[in-house]
Length: 435
Image 1: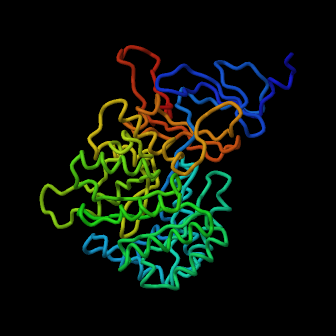
Image 2: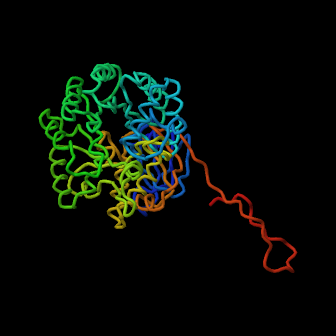
Image 3: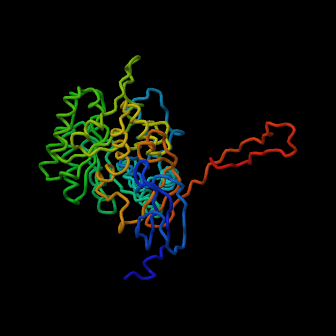
């Protein structure tokens, strides 16, 4: 027997789709959880929101972003557009970072990401003798202050090496004891890459946390630290807890070789993130024609069992001198670069900023009765349309509380006369008609 309480909800989001061109349904929310999903729900509710046939899903997940060094173009020079220059310029700039400075710049990016429908982010935070723990302290504040809209994981990150700066090891250790969620390394900037990898895993095992490496950022497939990472992952039993980002040298390999590497990655439970904006900008600088794309084939890897994602990486700095933290735009960019067109491939790309990205971070994803009411609305008929058209993000809720609303776009059409000049009444198209 049902009670009156069964039909009393805090919120009902009406007229939305849960699949491509699917039937319209209503989503009811009670106490921060999804309480019911059905067409034309009849109920008592505190708040109704008309989704106007938009696509509803759990939100975008950014598996790889650098909030601490975002928005620093005004204090860096970009002459070469190379990885070495980006590392050098950022290392110089971050010695002058203050906690408040990092907070202000990170907040700008996080607020953009929220408005673009991102509900979870994994941010790397550089910790070393130049940055100290200032950036880390700022990002901890960001994590707390924006928890109303997005969940942020903090990866304590050794950008500039470990064996060359042994004091960084103790600083990373301290950060992991004081709120960092996982550990990250960058073997290609260290004079002893295998020792670097070993030290990162030593910290991961000590603190029981996941690992995320920046790896093989070049177009030389023979210069690789991937075998060492695979071996260390298996040695420590860390399958399912290791991610790698960039791995741009996979773009220089034939597909058969990529498939073989995919099998090794899947067997080791290692996930992979591609960063199209950065990988395109920094690679191929020695070519004056037919410039290599430098973007690993995430869709090929995914088809052979690798958990893959597409992410932001950097925003407005020497690594990527543009960006707006929009993951749907990044998904569209990847689909363009990878020359994808088939429906199944486009859906897979949407998953790389949604469900597959969430799987990489080990978090649930999906609109299901009984689960948290974290819901994002996209002005699109479904995932395919969202990627193809860079669907406009309409509004979002986290645990049933509305976290943002982007308003309704309007066209200000001009007044026009009726075609019949003899008519006494003037026909007018109202200004501000909704699109």
